[in-house]
Image (cartoon, rainbow over all chains, first blue to last red; front, side, top):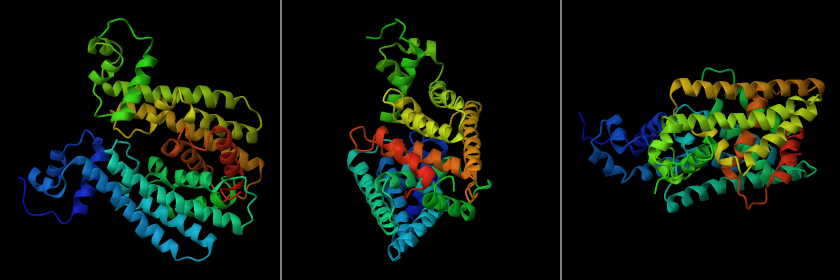
Length: 195
Length: 195
C-alpha cells in the first residue's frame, strides 16, 4: 500500500533510486519502481522529482557534493603539498569505499546520456576536481624537483583512474580494504607501481 | 525499407549495437533500433542473435577476444619481464584508444546486469587477464628487487584502473594521444606518478 507521508528526505529517495539503478540498470528502472521501493505513491515521488533524469542528475550532483565536503574541503586546509596529496588519496578512496555513499558515488560513472544542460553542470563539477588535482600534482612535482617526464594532467587522470576504478573490482569481503589499500596506492603514486 | 540480404558479418551487428548502446543507453535501445540501424528486418536480426542480452554478451566476449589477440598473444612471446610489461601497457592503451574497436571494448564497463551464466563467463575471462597481469607484475618486482610495499594484486588493479579509465576522459581532439600517453603511463608505473 502506498503511503502519502513524506519520506525522511530527498537523500533517502536518491539513495534508494541509486541502488535500484545499479541493480536493474537505469533505463530498466521506472519511476513506479522507485516509488514502490520507497512505499510512496507515484504522485508522492513526483512531488520531489519531476523526472527520472532529474533524479539521476541529483544523485550525481550529490555525489560531487560528498566529494567536495569530504575530500576537497579538508584537503584545502593542509599547507604542505605532499601531505595534501596523501590526504586526498586517503579521503578519496574512503569516499569510494564508504558503504553509506557507495550507491550514490558510483552513479558518477553511469553512462546514460543526461539532457545536455544537466550533463554540462555535472561535467563542470568533475572538471573542477580534475583541475584541483592537476594543480596539486604540479605543486608536488615542483617541490620534489621531479624530472618532468609526466605531465600533471596525465598524472591526474591516472590517479583518478586508479581510485575510481576500485568500484569495478572491490569486494567487501576481499583482502584489499581501505587500511591496506590506501598505503599501497599512496606508495604507487610516490614510488611507482613496482615499489 | 528493411532488406533481407545478410549483413557483412556478426561483427558489423555487434559494432552497430555497441554504438547505439553507448549513444542511447543499453536499456533504451530496442532490438528494433538495432535492426533499423543495420537496415535489417527484425527477423533478420533475430536470425543472428536471440536477444539483446546475447548481443551484449557477444560484444563483451568479442572485446575480450580483441584484448587477448592484440595484447596477451604478442606479449606472451616476450622473454624479458620488464619489456613484457612495457609492451602490455602500450598494447592495452592502443586497444583502448583504437577508433575501430573503442565502441566494442568500452562495453566491457557496461554495468547492465547480464543473466548470471553469461556474466560468469565474461567475469572468468576478465579474471584471467587480471591474473596474467598480477603474475607479470610479481615477476617484474622480483627481477627489480622491489621492496615489496605494493602487492602485485593491488598494482594490477591500479594499472588496469589507469588504463581502462581512459575512456572516461579521452578526447580524439585532445592533447593526450597514444604517442605521448604511453610513455607517460609507462613512466608512472616504473617511477611513480610524480616522476
